[in-house]
Amino acid sequence: MFDRSLSVSLHTLNYPSCILGFGNSHRSVYKTRLNPVLAMPPPSVFLTTDENGKFQEFNKSSGSNEASLGIDSLHNQAKTVGIIGGVSVKSTLNFLTKLVQLSGQENSIPLVLCSDPLLSKELVLYQRNSFPSVNGKNGCAQVDPTLIVENLRSKRIFLEKSGARCIIMPCHLSHTWHDQVSSGCSVPFLHVSECVAKELKEAKLKPLEAGSPLRIGVLATNAGFYQDKLQSEGFEVVLPDKATIEHTVIPAVDALNRKDMEGAQNLMRIALQVLLVRAVNTVILASDDMRDILPQDDPLLKKCINPLDILARSTIKWANSAERAT
Image 1: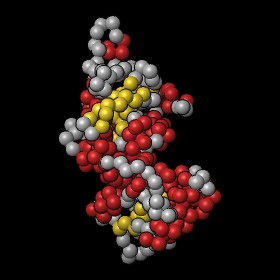
Image 2: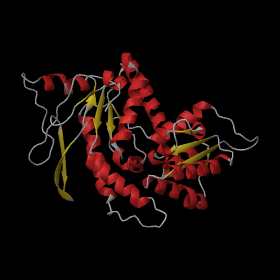
Image 3: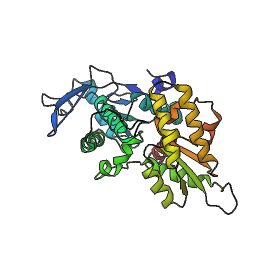
Image 4: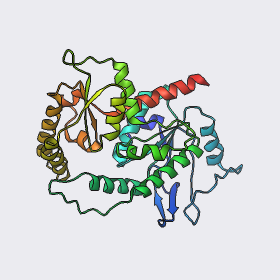
């Protein structure tokens, strides 16, 4: 599951040792085996639930290696990062791989990861309901976003109690509720749009056309928070027009779901070209689905940025700063 560079720096707890359960007044208690539920360099933390699906207290008896090496160690490290997994395990693992590669084996970051398959399923259903298909029908069961927010908040609280000194969500869709999830958080909770805006400002880009504002294209299923943040930082945000969305973006995602890769790639290239001809410096490709459409060596991807790459770099910068401050 992990490549060599990741396995060196990252220790993953696999089931059956770790079982994570959630319950609330809106639905029956469920218990989900997580793989991985927690990830960090040694030492490890073992977590179980009681019969009501609630987290048990960590067993700190003298005979427990897990207790003596686990939660205390995380609380004593100033740069422990808590991660809330998103729509897919694959995208979360891709982010972890990049995070570990950027940190380097000599400067690895302690990590606590919550990866919940049920949350992933709810996010996927919500995304499908929110993003129309060509025929306007999706056939998916409706998902109450308040339940997603509750789920995300419970994970944020768990990560805080587990010793995380900074929390991140490597998931574009989850950032839709960042304000609600981060409300009351006792540690920094990075927002991907703020990280993107900061890095773009530091890049000191020049407009492609003399006398024109600095334009940034955004191609995403939810471009709202990117647009708001970038505009507040002085960038002009360029979004696809209605015709482009209806005739290229939506059909591209539909083609991807049908596993028609050639059709999806052709449509996605058109959508990107529509933005690029409007003199944008770069295109924020803020969707895992859309980014997976084009092959990694496609020249058009060189004109795009992946916000999660920037989130990973911002996390490393935070960790380095936290370490220097100790």
